[in-house]
Length: 120
Image 1: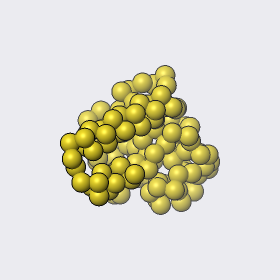
Image 2 (image 1 turned 90 degrees about the horizontal axis):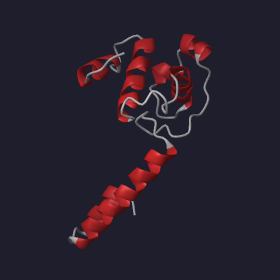
Image 3 (image 1 turned 45 degrees about the vertical axis):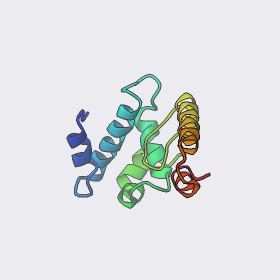
């Protein structure tokens, strides 16, 4: 399992074999969850979720060996960057984004910038 940012980036590079690329994405996601192996989906569930995700690299979604081993199955909580978040993590992030948005508005950041950053 890769542990450093450099190792994550190396494994998720397009020149890597597809199975190593998938391991890199899993490691990034697990790190995002503070290495919580209990809460984070297993590698198998994560891999199936990635193969079903619209933002997954094409080489992962079209690799016949990976698809046979990890048939596509949507994974709730998998974001556009292929990081998984629990419902509690998603709620916490939404609350924090709303708080920061309010601070920006309070501090006079132009509304166009607020909308560009937060989408509302």
